[in-house]
Amino acid sequence: MSICVFHISTRTGRSPETRFGENARGHMQSEVPFEYQAALDAVFAGARAGGPVTHACDVGSAVWRGVTDPAAPLRLPAGQDAEAMAAAQ
Image 1 (tube, rainbow, N blue to C red):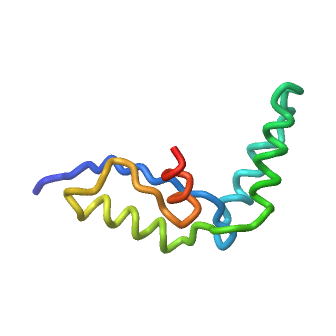
Image 2 (image 1 turned 120 degrees about the vertical axis):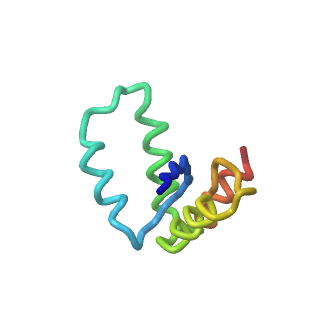
Image 3 (image 1 turned 180 degrees about the vertical axis):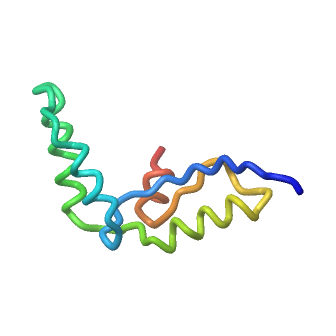
C-alpha cells in the first residue's frame, strides 16, 4: 500500500452559497488599526458590489484537477472571480 500526499492550493473569491463568509466574520471581530481601516472598507465594499463568484463545485473541480492531472499547476484558481484575480496578477 502506498500513501500519496497532495499539496493543493486553490484560490477562491466570494462564495455566497457557502458558509465561508459567515465563518470568517467571527474571526474578523477584532479592532482594525486606523491606518488599515480604509483598505478594509474597500475590500468589504467590493465584496458586496456583486460580480462573479465562486461556487462550491468550482472548488471541488479545482481540487479534483489538482489530484488527477499531473500537468496541473501548483496553484489553481477556483471560480470566475478567482480566475479574474489570478489573471490580473
